[in-house]
Image 1 (cartoon, rainbow, N blue to C red):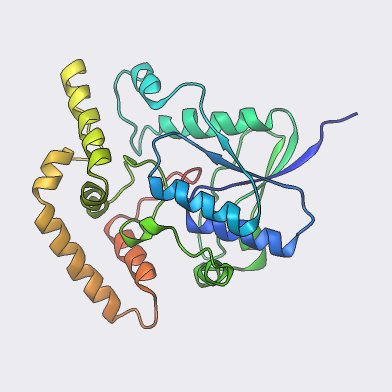
Image 2 (image 1 turned 45 degrees about the horizontal axis):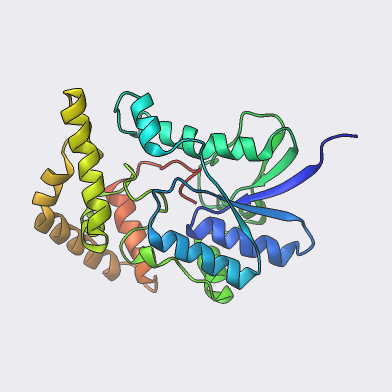
Length: 269
């Protein structure tokens, strides 16, 4: 008797994976889908609120996958080197490994919310038993379709979309400078924790690692007024040229223009 075939869909707390869960439930209501969330325990409270909203609206149960060891353990393992775009050890140890342990040796179809208007692949496992499926690409769905799906479902966008357009840990190094500033305002306790991680690496290791390339968070927050003013100017310009786009769409465009580097797709869908 062979291993069972499983259908899995990872929710990140972001718009695309949420819209995919809605889409798949509508299109394939009898598919025995398993929903999971890779929980680093360093997420924003808005993310957990959004996941509970998804469960309630769709009548599903999301399985929370956690790493065997927490972030602080792995930070020590990596010598106090904070994760960065060039060294994304957090994604590997805290997202991918728990997912692959969850699937084990079962044959699994992993449904991924990459849109038809995106030139990226998302996380694709190197394990041959995990096969990626891209329903939005196959069905030609683009960003406007995803926003419509979320609106029609009553789930809408997560609350953090007021100031941040990517899901992920509160200290994610892919945050733009404006998002760091807003983190300090929305969640000063979490911002202080991120500052402490920087301080501790310098104190304990004798050298400095920062979340943002080229400056510490304290240096960044010292330029708070400048960063906000630049952002508001860009947002105003974007609104004037955006036509009928929503504020959330304009915010995403403006922030992407400020930083077009692609985040880890295991975290930010």
